[in-house]
Image (cartoon, rainbow, N blue to C red; front, side):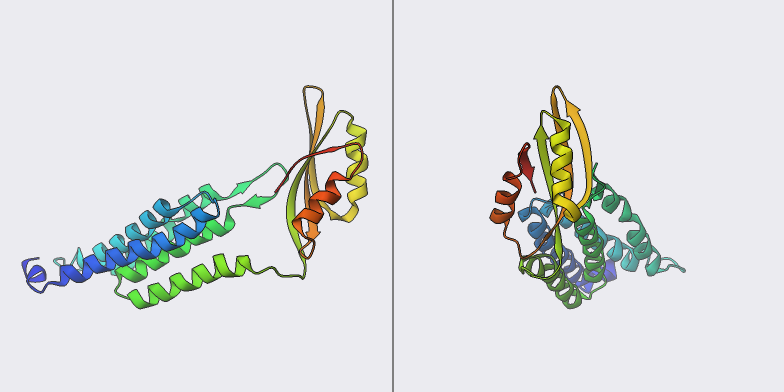
Length: 217
């Protein structure tokens, strides 16, 4: 260890940790900006932790006769699954959310491993690609295909909800009916054209007779 300190390699390792913190925070900021479950702190901790594991696996066992730096890295890859699994949620309407954030944590761990192994430039490029995928591509409004919208209708009569669902026709992907007090509610998963503007969609849903539009997201 004394030889290691004499060579000032510890400075390079600290730089790798700082690089991992910055790169993880960049991805976390994008997720937090969009109101997702895992934000700056979570992504920064994952990236720094993965980087530290890699540094330990490469330099922490140098005084032993037999060691394998890849074993700790492999453990990080499998171990990060418990965080990602906790972010994936299946709602009552069977709509699964959190997949992108979970995948973001997974790739953030990979970026941390890359920074810890000394491939800082590659880790930085990977961070830019992740931000490109999550932010820029998400901001582009593609006009082809459909998008998923969660809608909640309320009515005093369940027959009105049934008629509303029938009127929506093929756009209904799934729905869930429930009753609280004397009010019936229908949670509906709709597939609407991406070219339809949000205000036009709200106006169309509000024009359905016999039901009240409670929420749309």
